[in-house]
Length: 573
Image 1: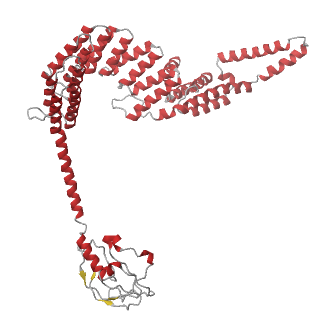
Image 2 (image 1 turned 90 degrees about the horizontal axis):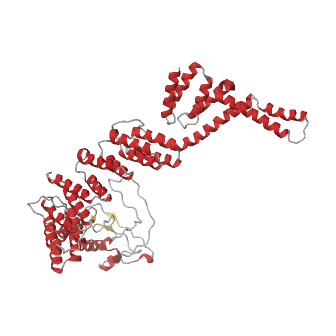
Image 3 (image 1 turned 30 degrees about the vertical axis):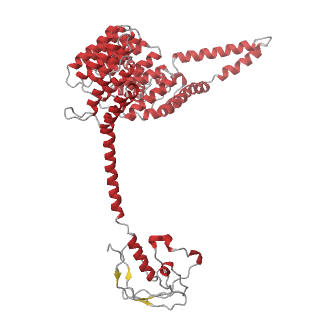
């Protein structure tokens, strides 16, 4: 039995405060229930109620049920019983001292002592016992309400080689931020250890753990976490080794920092540009300029042996910057830049660095040399692969023009500007013109659907001659004669004089919509519909008809039968 209890206690030491540790607590309680050790069960419940775990309400109700069914003497531990007895004795002694201050009869002392001893009943002691644990439960529930959102967002609390999704990684960061603001060191450590189970393959969480422990002043925990990260969990990732080198340098372990950089250079990621730059900068901070230059030179020598190295151009540029900042090394910096084009393929970042460095050098500007390199890069050639985009070449040409505008004379500026116009601006304008031509062509095609003025005029003339023709269409459709049964022409409605605007204001819509006042005789097709009679109204004088020399019908005009073919369908039918 002692062995099992020790195992349970060991497990609770590691994970007893975890949100999902309820299964371990439940197993422990069930084990003690089998042996009916009520005092130990009550002690387990007391410890459990201090932790904001899942199903905390259930365990609180179970504890109250236990306290209601068992006597208080079986629930208290020996220490709690002794403490309660000592508290009772102290209370009686204090009451006795107060009662004996001054001249008080002995029977009064006895009477004053009776209420104190009588108040320490078992029911009151039980209520006090439960109240203490209820306060623990209340605090735990309050904290649980703050972390339940983070806990429910943890989809995978165990380790797996598959990567976590972005939402889960962000949730861990937010949870750690909250716990660090809370300020409880033990909870912070517990949460970091939980996090590093699920996020063991992510260096940023190890780095964060080390920095947090360093901020708390626990260097032992910080170094332990760094060792686990660099030697076990993320030992093949250069990011953690670069951080280890920086951390050791900050804490005075210079040999350890050099060893971390050498490990990256030799095994983890040979030729890593970030490691080379940081290593050289560390040596410069330590005052070892020769060692810093050696780091660059060894890296450049190694990259020269590689075919089509992508690191070499940036390495040359960075080495030149480093030399420029060193005293009496500016001439060597220019020599490094002059050596680079023989060993690297020209690129925009490298040439941009060369132009920038040439601007800063207090020496005579090598405009001819740089102009040759820029022209070789921006002018398309069949000998060199076109690795750069048009946008990159144009941007570099613009940078070179700004450089010449500051340090060059008018002849160099004219030459570069003419080349820039020829390669980029003129070609761009041609493409824009081709685009505009295509848009205009599309616009012309769309205009074909519109009518020409001659068609509109002819349509308006025809409608002016026959103002009473029903079912007139707009002038954008060509008029075709159709043979329809003759209908009786009815007088048109006389409109209010305020609406007698000239029809010319509606140029392409020169038509009228008369309202008939007499029924139209039904044809054979529509014979099933009864004819409707409307009251006779006065007619409307159409300006178009008057302009065309035709008399418009008036109210006195006798209705006539129209025999003129009517326009119904347009030219598209």
